[in-house]
Image 1: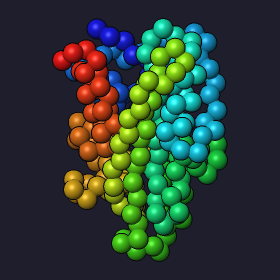
Image 2: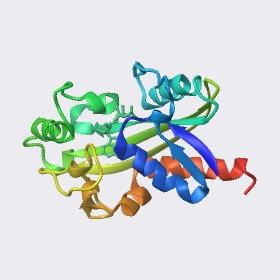
Image 3: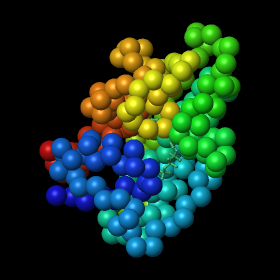
Amino acid sequence: MTRILVATRNPGKLREFEEALAPEGIEIVGLDALADAPIVRETGSSFDENARIKAEACSARTDLSVLADDSGLEVDALGGEPGVRSARYGGEGLDDAGRCRLVLEKLAGVPRERRRARFRCALALARGGRTIANFEGTVEGVILEEPRGENGFGYDPIFFHEGAGRAFAELSRAEKRALSHRGRALDGVRRYWRYLSGR
Ligand code: ITT
């Protein structure tokens, strides 16, 4: 069993990592396993850069391989916002539901054909303070008029996937994994891991 530390404080992300990587024989440990976890400022201007910043800072403090995720929602009609600010959109006072409401308010009156959006996920794999591989995944969708569904986290209730015909928050975890930005990026991690282990 290989252990990888996933450098996230987001429980929704952590669960998705565990479920995608367990079948590969990879055991995920969270940031709690790091006695002096660094406070990382996400100062990068891209998802990729922020994933590297998080992965490198944490991997400098452990012998384990570290995977970090930076992800978010880009809404075309909002010029790509919330983008790299997805987790803090609207300020510290808002929770996931509040951030979803804010996006819906900003899109009030915008017709469906102009509500295109995508989730992006950048993953960085680091050892000893250096990034050794990067992975990314994207999924296209449309922002709904009202939140739908109870599953997932973040902006899942307002993100409609046209192929599935449902909001991400209406999908099971396995269904979301098969379609999502993070699922696709994690497919890259799985392939890389199999290659490294000669499978
Ligand atoms: P860590 O930095 O500790 O990993 P975080 O939540 O702050 O956790 P990010 O800076 O990468 O992570 O912000 C990503 C935000 O984008 C996240 O808080 C959600 O609001 C949103 N997001 C990312 N992936 C999502 C998904 O699969 N479904 C819904 N929202 C998602």
